[in-house]
Length: 163
Image 1 (cartoon, one colour):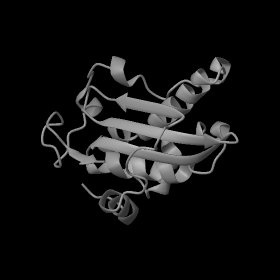
Image 2 (cartoon, helix red, strand yellow):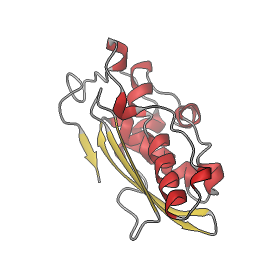
Image 3 (cartoon, one colour):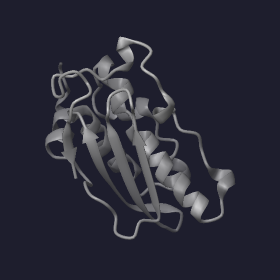
């Protein structure tokens, strides 16, 4: 599988790994089809993301996506952050292999889930945005929906953890 230099850089040198101390919002997304789990924590100051960190259990593409999402979101208003979509992330990474688009792009939903958590905790449920995918309710309907990769064998075994 061929990855861009940008994907490889974010995989080998992920940015913003860890957890924000006393986060204002927490979002955790998992995909039962491939086993990737992404957790994002945010610190909000003046309606802007002042800090964002991630922990990802998954393949190299999942780690690279999480890293890129945090870079794209940091400093944005909450409304700007929730508009970041998986296509923008894939473009910023210089593209992703077709087999990796579904499983690896959980990063934008982890960010949206963290912002939604913040909005709910702060009395703004009307601002909550839908996720791009219903990760936990999905059933593997096709081979394409599974995250087969040489990094993890059949898509069900353990991957690398960025934390």
